[in-house]
Image (cartoon, rainbow, N blue to C red):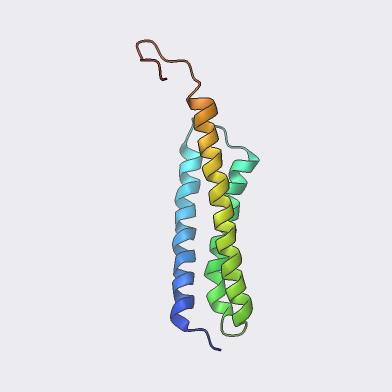
Length: 113
């Protein structure tokens, strides 16, 4: 069963767009001064998504010779993006609940309840 070329073009395009987006994310992470980034932040916000997007960019080139492996690579990339996204969501929520919400109010600011 031959895989259609347009499908591989789509996932390669998604990978290229994601790769460009990762460049934007890295630039914003380096610019911000509110929080010092740790190893876990770099891993889940930059490295894992970058690996997933690079896998999506490379897999269309492998589809003609290794169709089955290319499709598995796309599935692995999607699972990796999902895994990193779930971690990042929980990380953001816990930061807002345990850090931002528990800060004492500034002078003249109403108390959050």
